[in-house]
Amino acid sequence: MTGQRSQLFDTASLYFRAFYGLPESLTGRDGRPVNAVRGLLDFLARFITDYRPDRVACCWDNDWRPAWRVALVPSYKGHRVARTVAGPGGTASYVEEVPDALTAQVPLIRAVLDALGLPIVGADGFEADDVMATLAARAPGPVDVVTGDRDMFQVVDDDAGVRVLYVARGVGKHERVTDGWLAAKYGITGAQYVDFATLRGDASDGLPGVKGIGEKTAASLLATYGDLEGIVENVGSLGAAVQRALVANADYLAAASQVVACDRNVSLPDADLTLPRTPREPELFDALADELNLGGAAERILKAMAG
Image (tube, rainbow, N blue to C red; front, top):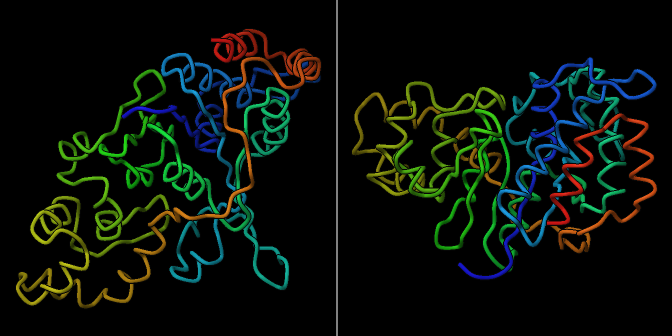
């Protein structure tokens, strides 16, 4: 596919991975840990260098556990909630359980990205997944989504030039997820991933799935009937055990499929996603790099941006 290549970063997924992959002994001049900041910059530099995108976006979780998803499936990410606080208009707002040493680095990450001029894109009431899915749908050319989250497999579309650079095994061992990769791994396409994950479940997101239906059964059903709607329409022709499981979980399936599916039509702020070649605020970036002891990580991201 021709056109400008976009690289969409699942920022939280990457800085969590950086935090746990590097020691907290990496500190700034004041002794604060900066392992997540340094690791994230190196991740960005690596992917920008290797894939040479024309456009980039550091996608943000403005709401990591949106109330509308919780209303559909109350267990959604429930095991990650540290506490619940009152939100605007009496709505609930959920504070994620995150190590203090990482929480303190998130504002630093934003400050560094802002100084570099790397676009940060988020939308209130939505997760970074929704932002990435929306940007991928609107992109003027091929798209690489950089994440450690399997949920994003749903945007994979060989015809549209959308793939996922999956970092679950590490940045150096990341996998290029295409429809062909999904077919070999699971026996499905990207378009079938939402239904596949709905049936199978995802413990990491608090989604139980349908008891008795694992990956192989879910893939087999989708291979035969195409999608969840086709499976439900033909439930009477299925084996007794699978039939009972699907009928018993009909309400869950209807709700969970909406939770798993990314919103691809989120209203996003206007942003120029052109990869900057130099920092937007070079003096500020230099000051932050010095204060945070970013060292080689600062040099590598600048080199990657400059091309």
